[in-house]
Amino acid sequence: MYDKDNVFAKILRGEIPNDTVYEDGYALAFHDISAQAPVHVLVIPKGEYESMDDFSTNAPAEMLAGFFRAVGKIARDLGVAESGYRLIANHGADSHQEVAHFHVHIMGGRALGPMLTRRD
Ligand code: AMP
Image (cartoon, rainbow, N blue to C red; front, side, top):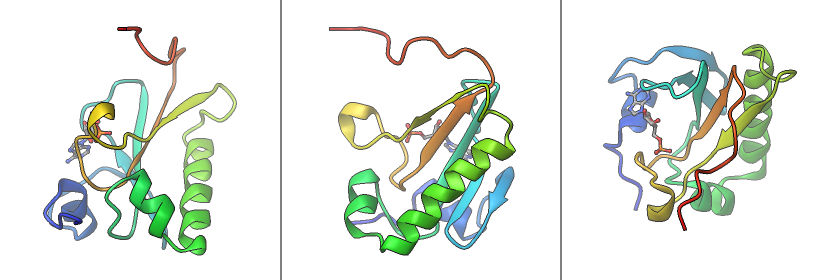
């Protein structure tokens, strides 16, 4: 069940402020409040999708295409398409997903190192 009180739902409804970098009919992008890299932007779909599993299963094809086209455009507009960037979409407990509204992190602006710190 989608929680309408999650922080990104409130941002979409304009109830709390955000530092917007891009918006269209499918997506809203804003700076992460706790940036982990020189470029750290969150992209969220304009719809009630809890996570990647929900979004990939239930979003209409037009939304899936519009959302991921927006992610690519935002990365280009942020100037990291040539230097490189990392996308992260945490889903569920093992990934440490904190906000229960599907979102993609765009991270870049420096060499990011290996994908994960190994902890077997
Ligand atoms: P995740 O662990 O993938 O769910 O990531 C949630 C992200 O949302 C974290 O990187 C937080 O710093 C970020 N975040 C939480 N609240 C806000 C907010 N009000 N504005 C911008 N970013 C936020």
